Length: 507
Image 1 (cartoon, one colour):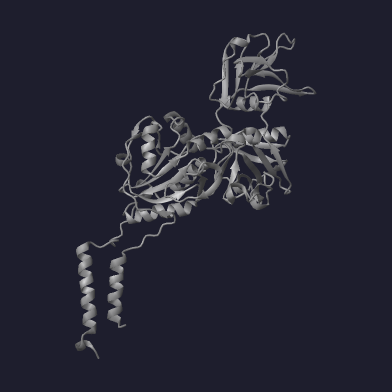
Image 2: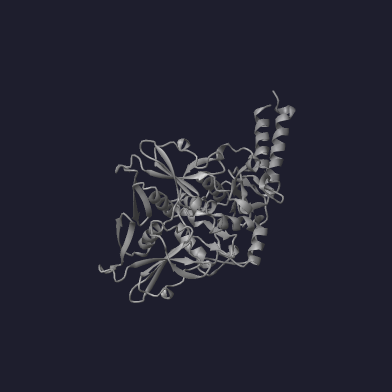
């Protein structure tokens, strides 16, 4: 083929193809979403159609989610941080709840502030959100959400420790009366006066109010009897008190009236109440157990020495099993989380305060190869029959269900089987979906789960910004030529081909 003919063919090909767009996530071709305004974490109305700007990232979460949602939120925070100032001006992040019965604006505000995600977190009535989920082709599996919440048992959590000599041990979580009292006092800024004797640890004072030396009264430990809805004196000391079985405890002078103790807040997973001699009361509780609580509980019960420092950024571990992390940060104590789907340890991108309701975590020097940390569940990695080999089992008894791998979902009416997904609907409960919408609110890219790479997701956002000529992109090249120009270019190309083939132009 002659040079002019080649030029014509290339020109036609360029016009027909335009500029190809390649995304790392799943590319979609959907109509623009049109949903009614929802309520954000500040109690104000928020509408995607009027309150968003440029490219829009829409994620679906629920705050009681112990694993996927916190990881997803932190990954999106990293995406946002990866963008330039100009790019951030044209990218809007929005999170929509799939658990409206629990995720009130107040709950979403606490979640967004705790996670450090300042963007809108939206909720609404079940009817309002069902329309939103349908619009985004999201199938919300409420029973999975409920099982996520009901299934979590802190007593089943464990902490694996790999020391600086590469020796590993596993410790089950324990929540004794002392651990509960100590950590609640830390959160409430109460000072404690305690001593340890052959009978165990004893509490002598709270906030400077010490029991008298003549034992005319002493600080008495009480437990909340949920069956009778009454406070009862504990028959054991705080070291032997199992606060996982009786999560609400109270301290009061032995001469006081138990009826003056405040009832525990039902929303607290565990709490400590105090009745002072003058009749005033105080109460401190935690709503969810996090990796800090699990670490302290397990290592206190196992008598493992450690130093955990509190800072403006949260708690961090600087010494474990008598090994201090060096000041030059040549290595540090790293937090790992057990990925049941991949049967492997992964470095956590959450701090121990933000990692809520963990099942199995590990602490190891940062130079340790995660693949060498022992599995916390015997035989889990070798069970190829569970969930048809496409997931792992979670829970026990009637609440036992599969956590299916990405691309798989439950078989019909069988929560212990995982089959390949055959539709474009995305199940939210054991997984989740995040969309990237263009400036016209058309879902353009979909990312499932939370195991995607921040750099890949960011690249898709930037690709769409460039296509939409946003975020500082001012390229003069038009991706798709107007129809009249396209036809004119095609005619010119055909003329060029004919001209090249004319006898008068040969030789």
